[in-house]
Image 1 (cartoon, rainbow, N blue to C red):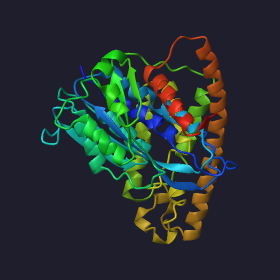
Image 2 (cartoon, rainbow, N blue to C red; image 1 turned 180 degrees about the horizontal axis):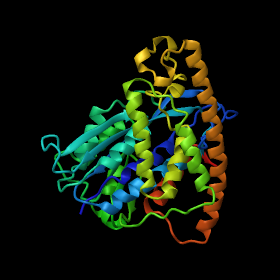
Image 3 (tube, helix red, strand yellow; image 1 turned 30 degrees about the vertical axis):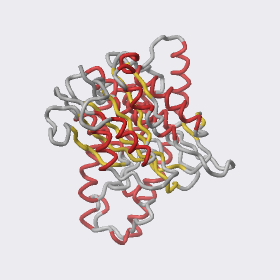
Length: 387
């Protein structure tokens, strides 16, 4: 009787497509998976807060979220805008669970804004459900108060809230929370798990209208269909090679390189197709690990080889000179670029193959299809194009 975490992935991709394009029309950035950006990273941000109802068991909904997350992320990677590439950050909340603090309104901030997609995946797979009261207005207001949304008018700021109980519950009126969102230039999008008209009757559509957001309804019991392609095995072999290009450093590096493997396994639990989708995501410009990988960290402005400590280095780099470490990181960077290029080429063939197969099939993934439709509609208003 309640909803769940499937919505994380819906958020993940709908927000990114809405980013405003405001720069030189002669310049474009490719967002294809595996393709390196041709422009500098923008100082602007896309900030998305995912608010997920974790009351009562909704296995079908959770499965959709886990099984479709990476394909939705991939769809975002095909977006192009005549602008510099913005930074992406995602925050995660759960609400409506009896195990949560009643004084806070049965909600919990799981992740502040982060660009670590593995952390988002990890928390998604760790969520559990329990009966409870879902206070939509309360959790929306909490996300507005507790998260750092920034003050840049050009930033894209979005909330995605998912659930299936009346939007009117709790002490905080959703309209008041919506007014506060508008003051912060934050758009609230709502996802109802159930009948479209029922969602309208229980004010989920109105909850989106307050901030000019989008309202969507999905069938949470629909099974995800992954279409196999002749290129899947080759892409998965490249994933193994890609993992070998990471150069973990510090305590976080040891933990995160293990976590990367765990999330690979989590994706694989939902079939080869899902594992392939994650590999494609890892080959995209959205997959960044500068907090623990020297290859990504080197690109950061505040990074310095001189500040690296011996104990922070992986075993194969301990005792090496700065010049030797730089040479090794450069080699790994070049290898990663080569692998990403191969993944991108194979994925183009995979996309063409899947597109043809879909023409002959009536199957459509509920969450994925609904979200992609919404994101492209919003993206059109912001001058995005899709390849």
